[in-house]
Length: 355
Ligand SMILES: Cc1cc2nc3c(=O)[nH]c(=O)nc-3n(C[C@H](O)[C@H](O)[C@H](O)COP(=O)(O)O)c2cc1C
Image (cartoon, rainbow, N blue to C red; front, side):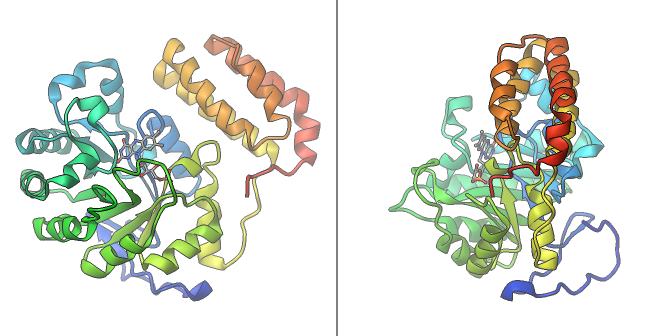
């Protein structure tokens, strides 16, 4: 990402890709943006830092409920933490009440948020006990009320994360996108499934392409992008201005670097060696421990080791012993020991990268 005022550089058109025009998000000039998707329980500060280091252009924080009374909980207190090492601070808010959403946006802007993202992309009802997130797409009038209220409340860019529609029979993504543009939303990310589909079935990119055709603001394509080849395919199909990656970055954050290299130079990046993965993983786990403390830190670490172990030779063994380590010290010692014991193998072994 360039954060300067120079004229946008022309982008080479490799792989027959559609022209990708650089665009501004507040003070940031984005060229071929590849974003880390917001993921509750995953896109916390430590993971966002790792993904930024590994080539993500922007990283979006886990959703924060608009109801400020819920911010006192330990979980939400941590979600409010800021780190400049995560890139521009993008705060995602979820809710169903225009006034509460506007107030939450304003407070976050006062606390240093650089972009407010509105969650209409995930089934937030579980958290908020009321239709919010992607469920809002069923009610375009309420969508408009919320978007207008939030845009009016802050003087930073407001973006929208949505799905292709409420259900298969009512794919109203194009209508919602037009409303969003009219309300002053500056960028839309679209997960190529309806709310009804949740995570089941194939992503369809036709509606993302239709949304891109219907609005003048930048559109980011999201859903099941898990390789450089898939990234090219999705960009070609949708004509989107950038990509958003979620689950494929779990245990494999270097996917951002891989996609970036492929889009820019038309060649595959050298995969990280197993030793490099092991070092990255140890740094990440240390950061998780420091961020969450003993109890939650060890639980979160297990989740990430489960993912990383899939990319490592002998990862199954590491995973099984790690799951029984129940303190910060024992987890760190185990990773250290594992790295030392396996170093000669690791050095000679190219990592299996799930490609
Ligand atoms: C564990 C998990 C948590 C998620 N949390 C959020 C969230 O807080 N806000 C949101 O807009 N989408 C959320 N999503 C949806 C993702 O941002 C993304 O749209 C979806 O996973 C599809 O992208 P992918 O196929 O690259 O994973 C979540 C997805 C997962 C798997």
